[in-house]
Length: 382
Image (cartoon, rainbow, N blue to C red; front, side, top):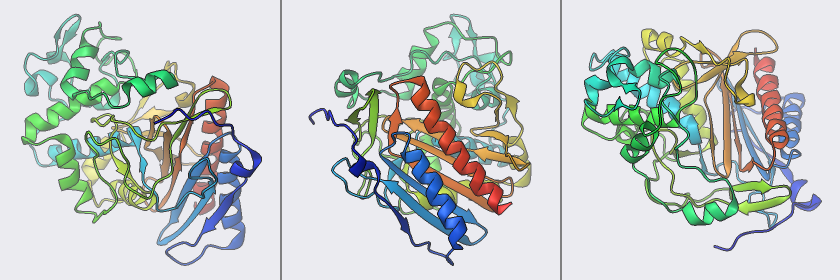
């Protein structure tokens, strides 16, 4: 694939449409507000935006921008990479196993992966599964596979990394802090959880996600791609802006592990996040465990300051009061944000087919516009 050195023009960014909802139509003012907020995300430089808002049994969907830089509109039923939203799936599987008395959140890593997390400052006997899920284990993440520019994308996009390989790379560096003494987001820690799930069940973590979440919910458009770099049609092309105004098509990628690998759609992902919180997937005791959060204060990531973290999910306060739960994820070319109320009745899912990595200011503008959309949508339905 040739590198795309394309500049966004007014014609490619001004295209927007409203897609009819599956349920009863929303009133015009609310639909207009949702569209306006989606357009505001697009105006930060994002190529395509898909949004689904659900309140009770009513859903509305809007799209903005383009699905490809030649001007094609994005489809509301398009597939996209959900990135670290995947962590909610992994956390849900672990909590189901806990409910079945097959493991405990306070089990040590050493119990399930004997000898793997030892030396170089690590002691698997002192690290619990809860700490891995909550990013408080101190597992170093700086060796996690990354792509920082277009050249690296073309060099690395088809490279296969096993979870065991990723874990060993992380453990080759001393820990960030002693277990339970800090908070630091760690994809590598979730790959350890993936290995634990296999040790407990005898099956890969994604096999358990399919068996426990995807199939029971009847989802037809959510799947684990494994080593297939393609996305099932239909889909919006994913673009990454590594340098200002220069968009690289980064749609194709092999990057699927327990930290973030699934592909889904607006409707399917909305079903998943609501099912976690409305009791279809987790018993009340397990849901309480998921919602037991820690502060992310001290995190260097400006996107998540003043947030809290449960088991695979962020939370923060809504401007109108109450708490929003935010399973979220970034994977090159795509950014996904969801917001759901504690009872699962109200939700909003946002898929953006661009990552603006050319500057911190651009990334923050994209994040702030998305936060406003989620806040406005959930406060309208409160």
